[in-house]
Length: 257
Image (tube, rainbow, N blue to C red):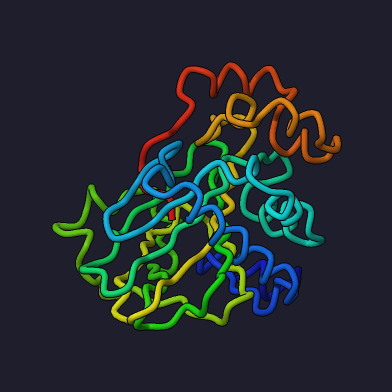
């Protein structure tokens, strides 16, 4: 990370990493996401949530080696730790495809309805653009600096679906990754084009908080057995505290980009 990126994450709440994905990784992610959407059909996203105007996929760590590869990309976790500190874990990995000609986008929200606590920030999201994000096709909107307010948009705004006077659009070419303090007020916008817009969302939490999707229960035993120690730690598979925090509520509700 550069000092400029650290400053932007601290003050603005997000940083855009152009060309973070190599071409072969981008192509592989696109291919596997398309396969899963075809295979799962109407069941797609049911492990987490389904959303009108979108197709979602959930529990992606369980559904392909290529998804596990991205967790080990050099440099990724440095950005996450810049937001959360050293003690992190994967909370969930999902995909979201916004359908063409969608009526409207998401309301402004903070992921998991989270506000910073006495220890600081505890959620961080990374958005992996599998398609170009443009002003017309459902790009991400965000209110810079709102992660520092320790308040949720639904508690302050008359209409979280409405445009915010300070919001900006986060756009980029396919292969870009956005690292975002997930306390930031943000939401996906409407796709007014004739083509879908797809991203993978790799969502992290501080280790003293529950996972949004309890990885130990969701991952098949054969997948768990195949994982290197580095991934077992990141998924908190051998962490008794995570078992205690997460086992009573496998799927956490609330908007997640």
